[in-house]
Image (cartoon, rainbow, N blue to C red; front, side, top):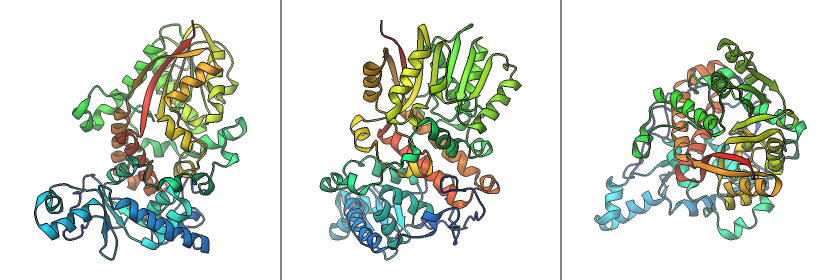
Length: 478
């Protein structure tokens, strides 16, 4: 077992959520999520969670912790947050509103302090441990300190949105320029070479089919849905519409790739088989590749149960090893696992196997190009605990890679990040409804907090526009 899997005993769910009690006089967000965040066990197993069980305690870590504490406190003073400390200190705009109300007892700030504006509440339970982890690991430390219970939030997504919206300015510019000196880089063992990629994929997708089934819908689709709703109505979509929205997303990709009866389809990244099933239902033959043995097993079973075993082949194979010729190539949220060094290889492989007149439809999570360039070699909490070796591309990077390295051209894009935010909301609520079941599988409360942080962290990215997701249609240059 490793910190990336978190599987093991020791799951415990406390009766009290320490983040639910607001400080007297401080305006706080009413509890907006329909669950209680699991508390980590008093004793965390160091064999499973070595970085969580022990707080960094070296001299360097203590010095870095004091610096990180000062930077953090300075940064949050102007943020729309209420950051609460055990000694009664409150930082953020909520505290400023309270102070202004105390001095003037009128005006906008008084309204804020008395309930006019609600702020997300971040409760620091163990300030020294929080600062030490932040100083030792930066954003890795922010996630690890949540996993350890050093801080809490009733509405974790709302807190993360505040940080996501200002991620480029939270740290003073002079320190940002030094980021290459103090931020860790992705380990060479996690670069997505043909040798390493299987291990990277397995660490996430082979956790357990049963685990993913606790929060995915009946289609077992682990990517953004495409809902019929828009605007304010999109923000309240319900669970019972998720499966249809996932199938609508898949059908749009198949339509754009012109998949029909007789089409030869290559799918890069099988998932749990829903796209292959829907392509086969159109009369296509599908060759699908994955590096997850768990996904392959369940996808093959679903294909056989649906009666499409003769039309769908699912192989455990790296995309670079694919041979043959295909009328359509479809790939859903797989490019994020390729690694930026191999984006050209990914698109060159697609071009190599694409038949004359063929079309390509991919779905890709994207990030602004300047953020990609600033962070593409960084090693983050998501790399350590969720997606080793992953890098989210920008639209510009995709377009430049295909234009300079291949004969493919982007012909059409649909941005649908707001749909991913709501997909993640539904997954988050479903997962938290299933924590007893997840615990019984051997995934402890530290894992549950890790997974919640991952879902909320991701959702905040889409809610704020820091992340987007695109359906991109390509074909050969004419």
